[in-house]
Image (cartoon, rainbow, N blue to C red; front, side, top):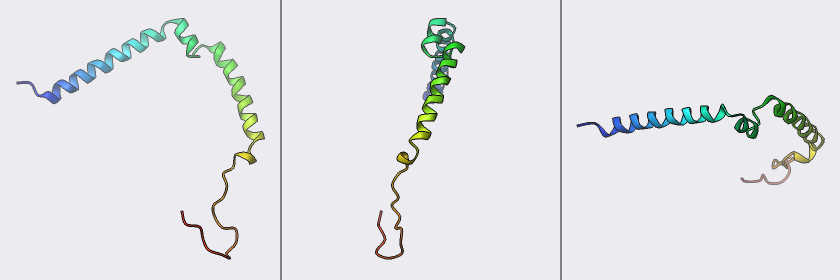
Length: 81
């Protein structure tokens, strides 16, 4: 009699191999690569927008700091979390 765990392991390995094969076949198609942004032309335009996001993030830096929950003086009681 075959062990049930062995069947699960073999079945999982077969499913993983089939999935990897299917993804590889899909990535061979140019239209799929374009939609995923994996072409060089689209990657260059994406890096330009990344620079814009970085610049905006730097401009809004003080507003993005979380408020401090530690007391600023030693007077008074401490805040319990």
